[in-house]
Every structure is written in structure tokens, then in C-alpha cells.
Amino acid sequence: MFDATPLKGQRLVVVGAGSRTGRALAKAAWAAGAALVLAGPDPRKLEWTAGELSGPLEVLPLDLADERSISDFAGLVGGFDHLVSTAAMPANGPLRDLELADVQRAFSAKVIGPLLLAKHLAGQVSQGGSFTFFSGVAAWRPAPARTVMATTNGALAFLVQALAVEIAPIRVNAVSPGIVDTGSWDGLGADKEAFLRGVAERNPARRVGSPEDLIKAVFYAIDNPYVTGTVLHVDGGGRLA
Ligand SMILES: NC(=O)c1ccc[n+]([C@@H]2O[C@H](COP(=O)([O-])OP(=O)(O)OC[C@H]3O[C@@H](n4cnc5c(N)ncnc54)[C@H](OP(=O)(O)O)[C@@H]3O)[C@@H](O)[C@H]2O)c1
Image (cartoon, rainbow, N blue to C red):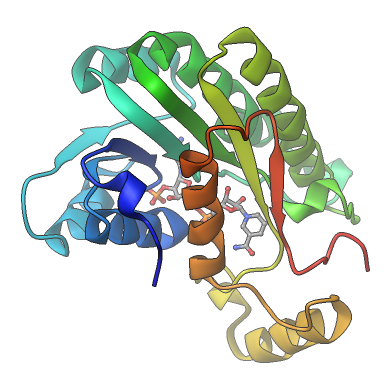
């Protein structure tokens, strides 16, 4: 499916490997010959992913809301080539109902956590290595009750520019998904199909995204040595329409 030869033998850390896009990415990178470190807050979910991949790989706990967890992770993981984080802890809802702790968690996943990953791990990235973080279309298409989501994803887009300059020549990029059927919309239940159909009717690509669309962008960000400080919009043009 992917021309992913450059990942062969590369040591790749996947933060969020326990579910959805992170899990799909881990499986695709594994198939492409990467040496994987599966990271995330829930060891049971990580073991679930690991159980589907035969062969040696590492599983390490990592909570982006906790600097000690990040520094402990840095102490355990050793050197690596690339890190991808799909982490998100959304705090959605009308402003009047937002709790500060939820807002802070949302910023931890998308802004403070990635900043601290760069702080604690940049010294362990090999030559030609990279960080790739996940932003999201909400930053470019704000909507009521999505203010925190819009702001965290937008801040991440600027963070990758700043980090690309500060920790150069390590490359730092973001992938910004539009509406992608990763499983995160399953909570809509019977309304999910109509929701996704409506999204596809409105966006210029006239389709909903798949995890594979996101993985292709991640592989591109990892592989292209002249791409840094960039947001790759994988949103079917949804931010424009
Ligand atoms: N799907 C879409 O339509 C869409 C649209 C726009 C943007 N995005 C962005 O794309 C990314 C992937 O989305 P997704 O749909 O695959 O699923 P998701 O449910 O948003 O994935 C969130 C991931 O973050 C991890 N996580 C949560 N708290 C964490 C923490 N404290 N430290 C480290 N990791 C933590 C979760 O770990 P566990 O596995 O342990 O739960 C999970 O793997 C997210 O950043 C999301 O915001 C998605």
C-alpha cells in the first residue's frame, strides 16, 4: 500500500499507539520494517496493539500531561529516529461549561506535551530524524463549542514552526486531519453515517478521510528531508468549504 522502504530499520516512537490512528500507524510502520516503540497512557491498550504485531518491539508508558512521565520515558527509550504523536484529549463544549482541568489536559496533549517531548527527547534523535504531531481542521474551521479544540490545534501548528527552528536540524511537522473515520466518530451511533455523508458532500474532495490517508502523510513527513516546520492538511479541503 505504501512506498515505505525508508522506514525499514528506522526506530520509530508512536505516541498514541494504543488506539485508532496511532494503532493503525504502528501496524503500517511495522509492516514497512520499522523498529517500534509503542507509547501512550494506557499499557493495556499498548499491549493490545503489540499483540497484533509479531516480533520484538517495545512498549513504554507515556502520559503527555505529566512532565515526570515524559522525562522518565526519555530515560528509558534511548536513541531513536522518528517520533509521531497522535495524542489528543479534547475539551469540547460551550464556554460556560468548560472546566479548567479539562482545558489544561487538552493543551497538554497538543501543545505542552509536544513541547516537553522536544525538550526531553531532542538530544536522542538521530541525524535526519523528525517529530510529527497531529493538529486538526478545527483550527482552520472554528465552530461553537469547539474553541479549545480550535485553539490547541492552531497553537500546535505554530509550535511546529518554532520547534523546527529551535531544534534544527531535527525536522518538526504536523499533520492536520479533517473528518476521518478512525473510529472516533462511532459515538454518534446511528447518526454517524449521515454525519460522514454530509461531510463528504460539503468538502472539495467529496469524501471522508481514512486512517490510510493520514498514514501516507506521516510517512511523507518522516521521509522527505526538505520538509520541516510545515502543516500537512489531510482534510479533503474541508477547511476551505
Ligand atoms: N478523527 C478525526 O476526524 C480527526 C479530526 C481532526 C483531528 N484529529 C486528530 O488526529 C489525531 C488522531 O485522532 P484519532 O481519531 O485517531 O483518535 P483520538 O481518539 O483522537 O486519539 C487520541 C490518542 O491520544 C492518546 N492520548 C490520550 N491522552 C494521552 C496522554 N495523556 N498522553 C499520551 N497520549 C494520550 C490516546 O491514547 P489511548 O489509546 O490510550 O486512549 C489516543 O491514542 C488526534 O490528535 C485528533 O485530534 C482527528
